[in-house]
Length: 476
Image 1 (spheres, rainbow, N blue to C red):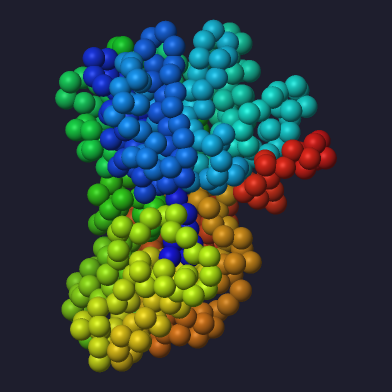
Image 2 (cartoon, helix red, strand yellow):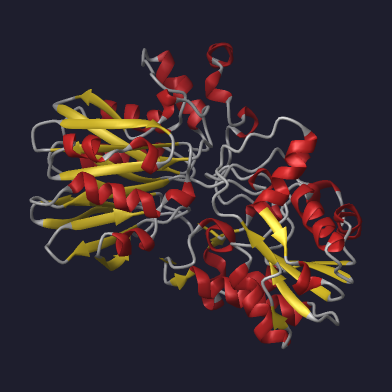
């Protein structure tokens, strides 16, 4: 089912807590961010003299055992869970990245995409740089290392930010301090929290602060370089941008509903999207059924506004893993029913409003409609809590090729016919942005409009462009 969703954008975590088991805290933090990336996980720990690292392919619980965590001793740590958006899903691309450079060691974990990463890498290669991975993240650590000639790391990070374009929330680790960095547009989230014992946490989402018992302090500001050292956090610089461009899809699908990002609780935003959806489109129906999990909050809001009864008419099997093998069409169809199953007694003979967050290719929506019809639903109206996705994302979400986006080449009537529903309604862009009140202009909505807030210099290179050294060489 997940093949027909936008894919997550990685999760990052940092902890500065001398005297505490920082590797364990990083483990719990990453566990709570697992929804942002399931391909690989890693933790780097510093003890004041050196950085130790462990990373592998797999889920957090698969990569780290109790004994493995006990070997990672130190006072501060950073961690990463990955979904590949640049570079193949391969062990060598797992993060954090850790290198010897300048006076000592430097680790980096990155959430986002550098939209001029291909061009920057080509420049660095011409200048004799060597790379060990095929990620755009290594371009950042390579740039920072080269710009750190005077051993002023905050200044080197600022210079790197002036050259790197696109989306990046970062945590960097030296032997004795952590730097938290957010790109000037603020595409990806990053927040700061404090432990009751006096330690400090930075994380992609506030749910990770809750997981380790930290209190939310504030969001890292767009363009901010925040250093966490023995005397606490301090801001070194704020690199300005013409506007904010926070990813609106963090609220629609990616982030956890218990997280609060830049002042908006994700679950409450989704609920309000559902209410707005009901104000725009409310056919005669008997029940509202969510597509679990990301459609649940919007469906509750829809039910509240419309007065229709909220029913759990689709059950999700939460024990079907991401690596579920789907070798043939017959097995694939079985796999869908194994992961999502209609409740016949709830939907039979009913006019149903189904609420989901988005449609990418339309194949999953098609199967859901068929399952509900087979279970006896009398009429099915399909409602989406987002506008049609017509363009790819270049800022850290793995969107399908535009040719595969159903809304890029079919109108709403054609999509409705394709998925087999009796009616189809997308939340309008105006309706979506109205949810954010006077902050409506602070969001990136390029996947709905094609208006990219940052020029995408390397648009044609694709997710695997850096995996082709011959192409990089030819381009130079």
